[in-house]
Structures are given as structure tokens and as C-alpha cells.
Image (cartoon, rainbow, N blue to C red; front, side, top):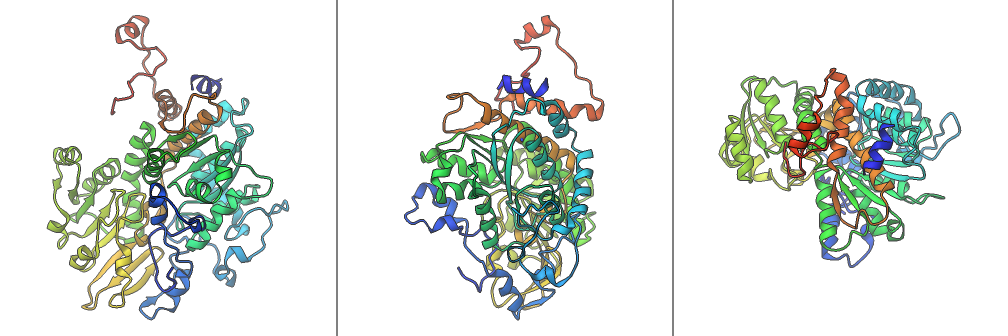
Length: 528
């Protein structure tokens, strides 16, 4: 590991509209054992969901194609409203100006807008840009062939271009059907990147895009960068031969890491994997500081709500929950917390929040936010009790926290208001405001602060470099945390932005503390 760091210094049912993840093509393989069943169980194929919505007499106002699938609320260029917008990108032949055609995006003509978005992001991503500058001569990812499945936005584009500058070849798809910035995907395709993603994919499109990245002519992937575990899952189940050639997996989400640990426990993980989600630079910066800013942005853009005096219940007081609560409290909200963990609950109490059970406050709160990573945290029973106008959204990675499927019933009417905003109306006229159909609200309804994404991107790049260059035997077929030295290195890349000057230990001080003067400065069990 230290050699790598030093070299960097000198990456179903067609009539039902389901919000849950769906069954992928790989799940057609029969006799899936119980150790991997949790992968398959979270995906139920709804390939005709869009048409079902358009035909439903209980779905009023704007159609899905005109609302949930556009980029209106995503800090993203909206594109035209021509007839082409109703044609699936899979049915259109598009070619970049160079003649390159190994991609599938919404509209390649939007590439100029996407390039401007990427240039703006670069200005706020000093860490990943510094890493590119320091490591570009060494090409530490030369001969790496990376399959990526993450959110595709301007910040991710900076990471992709960095990985290629460091020597890698990449093929990329989206981990979320609503978070892709179409014009950024177009800019990457124009630049010659094999990108398969567009905003508003059907679930069938979602798995098709991942499949196109994995199974391509003259392409043998040897690394995976995943957000949610979908690329890992599909390759393992549908292309086990290709999976055996993988040198390492880098995973950045709670859900994906949970799946990796399940695979490891059942003996099905035959390659080393790096748990980036629980690295200090991901957990303490992306989860905390990014969510602290983006929760307000998401709610204001999508609902125009004023926060002062609003009663909010936040389900989960982990790093994401802590960040959201800080922001909401700062604007005058009355915040309640639900928790299962007594330690997190005690932290919430000490921070001045009331810890309650959801049923105790569900009838009176104005906003409900989930951030647990669990399933069925907010059920139909809870939503039946909500007051008129209550806003409900999800800040956790998993899209199973709000039981949206329970709202797809004949007695309720869905009314599309704007992009990613639905009114769900009860027979008595009561309506709740559902954001992003229960999916990740900050990436569906707004954008993330580029600076924080720079920290995560640099962490991902270093994890890829570490696993790809690790000598045989350093990492076994298990899940590892990012080495502490790398966490500190990522942080150091971002300090110059603030003109921050680190104090250096004297020889005597280092000896007294039992530390190397160059770090790491904290033991692995230190919790920050």
C-alpha cells in the first residue's frame, strides 16, 4: 500500500409500478442458493412500468415521460421536448463526431452542455485533480479494465476521466434510474467513453445497460467500481467466468457493502473487495457533510417548503441522519429521531433531539425522512396516518425504506406535480407529497456538492490503485477497509483549498507518541 501512495505523490407484473429494485437478467439462473438470495430478492422486474402509468386512469396530470424522467429538478440541462424524447435510446442509432458509437445515452447532441457541467465540477474537486496531476506520469492503472456502476453526473465524469488519465480502460452504467445527468453522459460518450445510461431508464433498461458494460466484444474486465452491488451481482450470477478474472472490487454504498459481507460469509466471494463506504473520508465527509447540505437543497427545489417551525421526523441517526438533522435544526425545524441503536439514540438525545417511535409522531409531523438503509421503515399504515400535505422522502441508499408499492392500489390516486414529485391522494382528499418515488432524494431531486464528491472520488481511485497493484497474497478473498494511510492522504489532498497548514511532529514528539512522523496518526479503531 505504501508503495502505491508514494508513487501517487512523486479511482413481473407489467400492470404494477414498483419502486423496489427488480429482478435482473442474471437471476434467470435457477437454484440460486440462500447465500445470494438477498441479491435477487431485492429486484422484481417491472419492464413496462412507464406504459402502465400512462394508461392508468388513476394517474393524473403529467405523464411519467414528461416528468419523472426529465432533468428539471436535477441542476441539469433539460434538453428539448421534441418527439425524439419519447423514443428509447436503445432504439436510436447515435454516433459521436469522431465516429465512436459504443454507447447508449439520451441525446449525444447535448454533449456541449455536459462538458460545461464537467468543467464547473473540476473547479470544486481539488483532491481528485491533484491526484491526477501527481500520478499521471506513473500510470498506476495501466492495463486496468474497470466496469463501473455508479451515479453518472458531472462529478463522476471527473473521476472517470481521471481513471483513464491514470491508464485505465472503463465501461460505465448508472446505479440509479433517476440520477443520471443526460448531458454529462452525452459529453462522456462524445469523448469516447462507453457510457450506457440515461435519466428515467426502465428497470429492464437498467440491467441491459449494466450487461452491455460487462459483456462486450474484445473486453475482459479485471476491476469493478460499484455503488449498490448491482454490477458485482450481475457478473457473479450471469458471467461467473468473467468474475473469476476480477482482481478487485471497490464498493461505496451501505447496501453494496452489506451484500459483499453476505457473499464473504457464505464463501461466495472469490476476489478481494474494498469497503470504501466505511472509510473515514467517505463516512465522515460524504455521508455527513454532503447530506447536511443536499437535504435542504433537495426539499426546497422539489417542494418550495419553508423549514422554520416545521416538525420533521428523521428515521436513523447515523452519519447521514446526523448531517440532515444539523441542517434542519439550523433552519428552525423541530426534529424528532427514530433509532434502533441505543448508542446513536443517546447521541441524538445529547445533541438536543427527541428520540421517539414513529407511530408517536406520525400524525403531526410535516416532513418524514428515512436514512436507515433498512426496508419498510415507513409502511402504508404510517402513511395512512400522515396529515394532509406531509412530505416524505428517502436519504438512505436503499430504495426499500419507504413501502411505495403499498401505495399502488386502486383506492389511491397518483398525481404528477413536477419532476420527481408526486401527490398521492386518499379517497377523503388527503394527499401526501412523495419525492423521487422513495429513491435517493438528493441525487434524484438536486445535485451533490462537488467538493465532497472529490473526497469520495479520490478515495475510490486510491482503492482501485491499491487493489490493482497489490502483490499476490496481500489481499485474500474478503472485504477490507481502506488503509488508514490512504484516508489521511485523501484528506491532505484537500487541505490546500483552505490554506490549511499541518503541524509536524518533532522526532522527540513522534517517539513519545509511538508514531511515524508521516503517519498514520490514529489507530484503526479510532472513531473520529
